Image (cartoon, rainbow, N blue to C red):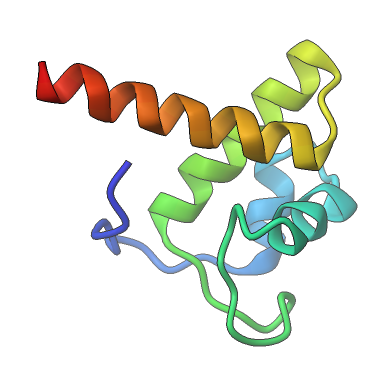
Length: 88
């Protein structure tokens, strides 16, 4: 996924709603640097790209009962796999 998609501006609450109202989950993703934030998470503004990451991470967590750190690793591996497929 490319981080160049800044088509919409979302709040922290928007991300929380996208992940079944689990604010602790979003904070865990931020702590694991899955969603990069440079200020207080509740005050930061997010993009559609961040929403896509949060929803993808939530599905992995929900389907496999993966922790935030395991989800971060899974997402990293999936991104690397996508890059390898693009190159071949």
